[in-house]
Amino acid sequence: MAEYDFDVLIIGAGPGGYVAAIRAAQLGLNVACVESRATLGGTCLNVGCIPSKAMLHASEYFDAAANGAMADMGIETTPKLNLEKMHGQRRDAVDGLTKGIEFLFKKNKVTWLKGMGTLKDAHTVEVDGKAHTAKEVVIATGSSVTPLPGVEIDNEKGVVVDSTGALELPKVPKNMIVIGGGVIGLELGSVWRRLGANVTVVEYLDELLPGMDMDIRKEAAKIFKKQGMEMKLATKVTGVSVRGKTATVTVEPAAGGDEEVLKADCVLVSIGRKPNTEGLGLENIGLETNDRGQIEVDGQFRTSVEGVRAIGDVVPGPMLAHKAEDEGIAVAEWIAGQVGIVNHDLIPGVVYTWPEIAGVGLTEEQAKERGAVKVGKFPMMANSRAKTNHEPDGFVKVIAEAESDRVLGVWCIASVAGTMIAQATQAMEFGALSEDIAYTCHAHPTHSEAIKEAAMAVQGKPIHM
Image 1 (cartoon, one colour):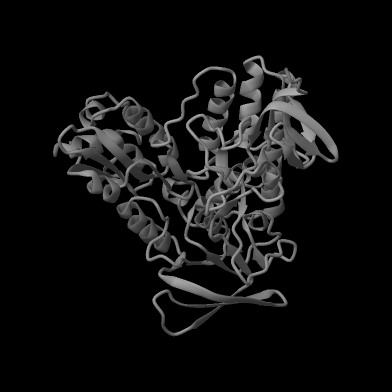
Image 2 (cartoon, one colour):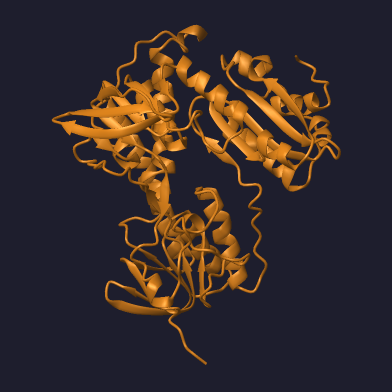
């Protein structure tokens, strides 16, 4: 019987990898986790989810003070932006959380192998020249920014940047162009718009936020325009050039037409992310990726190579930290001989703009492809808590199967939509009918009452509209 250095060796310490490592250790396995960054947590904690939310939150306060929202509530002030201090609180948040994971590794006796990991065979991973063996190897290397062909990213100069560079800008741009109308572009564009930049979003598709419900996509565009962001939808970028501190972006209608020239002192390229599979040595074990660069897995996250599993952004499905975390727990449980469970049909998505945008399950368009549906909508302007908080924008939408009344999807735009969507996800996990939500008592006054009202609207009986 072969002897291995570890029971499980995980390549990557992002949300999927570090969670898998901790859970596997909790289950009594001898675990190692390979990570080349100086800190644990991957893209999410270091340059993604966490730092962007720190900047979003801080910029919301500044915007409320600078643009009259606080004055409307009797709080009169003239704010002064200290951008370096704002960056400092972001860095503090990242530092605290990454150190927290390092503490959890030590607490659970997870071995951190520092360096780049390369597969030599199905049970051997080389890290900085030293070979380590494991009975099971889990690939959890995450994803990175998708490049725009012909466009050079230079985060140090700060003129043409990716999402990492957009978090570190030393001053507020006068004009910012965001290439891509997805989650990351809209979040970071919102940060700099609030802090004073003129922001133009260029999106190839005719609506923002691909994959979300069409009512949500249209309403989001209206809200962002009202906030002062210029939207150029159905527009193709044909070139980006830099001269000194100025970027020139040429665009034209996606369907063809006259070219337009835009100028800015900062361009954020945010057109998506790609799986990190290069340099892993997949060719050494005969493991191929699909046409999207992803590693195909079965229900237990096993690849086509025995002893090698994969989770998170490198496998099919939404590239979301919480999806990776759930898969990290599940893969550890499968390896330990238990049953790991992830319901990939119910992975909520959230956009942390103001207001927040969230959804889970099917869009109305997807649901109608399966059969007849009933839809209930309720506007946040009719919600008492949103009204008293001066947060009138948005709505909640509940989509239910016409015959059974089973909830198929819930979509919302509200200041706390990211928190509200958890209720909907849990209800759908247990097969809730819209009637179940409608007749569940919700505390008053809360934003979540809008979910109850939208569920009541499915049956045509909302109370407050």
